[in-house]
Length: 448
Ligand SMILES: Cc1cc2nc3c(=O)[nH]c(=O)nc-3n(C[C@H](O)[C@H](O)[C@H](O)COP(=O)(O)OP(=O)(O)OC[C@H]3O[C@@H](n4cnc5c(N)ncnc54)[C@H](O)[C@@H]3O)c2cc1C
Image (cartoon, rainbow, N blue to C red; front, side, top):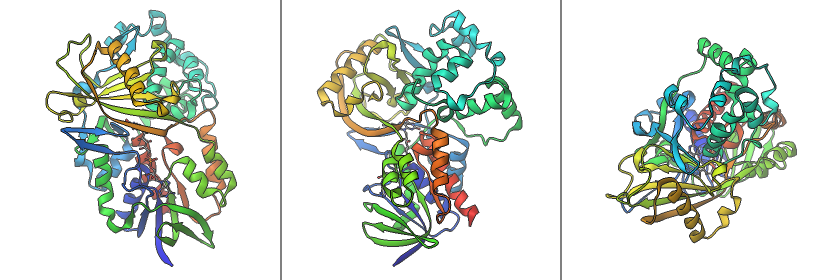
């Protein structure tokens, strides 16, 4: 029987982060990946002068993610989005308006009325509540007012979760705000206290990618694993064998002392089904929404009502369009479009239109074109480059998500060392997932 110290199942962002954290510490690690490439949903395509993404487009480098890149020698591979990307827009009553990022834009923003803006000043005086058991809408309306929830929080959730503030749970989506309220009685006081304690490792500000895109970053993370990374090799079952693990894979059985399970929730539910029916049930109940990511080559010489500038724009529900948002990728990362073209990524689907994932291309294109016309005055000159359909794209952590994850972990106690990570466990973004993968590996190392 093949033997290895630690097996990582899945080579998405979480699995790669865990594997590299272990490798750099000299652990005998083996990674099994069902697909024929590393990176999971992080995939980039170089074609006809374009570099475009099929999954995530940019990411925030959190403190733990920065620590990971430093220790694996990849900090220099990161590429920061151009400074113009700080400008972000919301479609508001048919026009693009800037998202307030500083006090001046906030004061003059049409997104909130004067009453809505003044309501924010009451935040420190609102009594402490139970954010962990509230939806995002209930939590942010209670603390910041309904205008902030509807005008700013709801579009933000569309950007990150393609989701809905009434269904997402505050504890999972805004853990630091919920914890700040518990710590200081208000978000403001709690956040100030936490900052004074200075316990959080700072990340790198701004939005990031890598020179070869997100897929290129995954390839660079995977490279040092060499033969230890087994592509097109799914793990079919995970069983306990005394104080060890026994895994059945496409290339035969392997025994391991420790396992990091870094696969999506439905795959984890299958692996846990005999091991722990309770853990399997919790993983199986995690909800996802589908998203279609569409890459567009756009003619920039057309006359527009709003220029293609900044990060891109989000489309709030009230605008009654199917598009969730669009990113101006060739503005974020110059050189990603063929000469004389712009590269725009359109996101469609989510809670707003789950059927998008099965819609024909001409219908998707028509609905995207309608939204781009409304937002930018863009008529014609749009060539779709790729449609990527993610059936289970983004996890939707609801109220009670964090306690459910704690129960899942508790259900796996008493087994040989096993860590569960991934976007459905400790945060949906690439930055969260990288940080969580590293943290899981460190916990395994600490446990010995
Ligand atoms: C369309 C889209 C856009 C996004 N945009 C952004 C963004 O701009 N910024 C951002 O921060 N985040 C974004 N995200 C979220 C982010 O990309 C993901 O949360 C993160 O990359 C998930 O990483 P992961 O390792 O948890 O999962 P995955 O990437 O899903 O990796 C899991 C891996 O496990 C493998 N696997 C499954 N079953 C088995 C098995 N039995 N054996 C072996 N291997 C198995 C899979 O093949 C896969 O490679 C986006 C996500 C999507 C889908």
